[in-house]
Image (cartoon, rainbow, N blue to C red):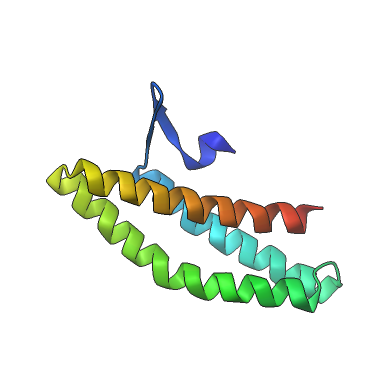
Length: 104
């Protein structure tokens, strides 16, 4: 999973454009799994409600995160790069929690 979402250079985690695309793809995949799980009865209505709340948050935050990442990359702003990495990591951790939930 780590190779899917993060690139490493030494001990420094680096967010790349590929990671950003993979995160969007993961969101779509998890959304599909949650929908199928709800239909099949393997995801409860409460779990799905939590997912939809997160999904709305993701849809607002993801484009902003991409924009900030692009600004950090173009300007070389190391502090913004760190902040963007934190945002990406949190979104990925949240997505992976949902992915694991529907994979049970």
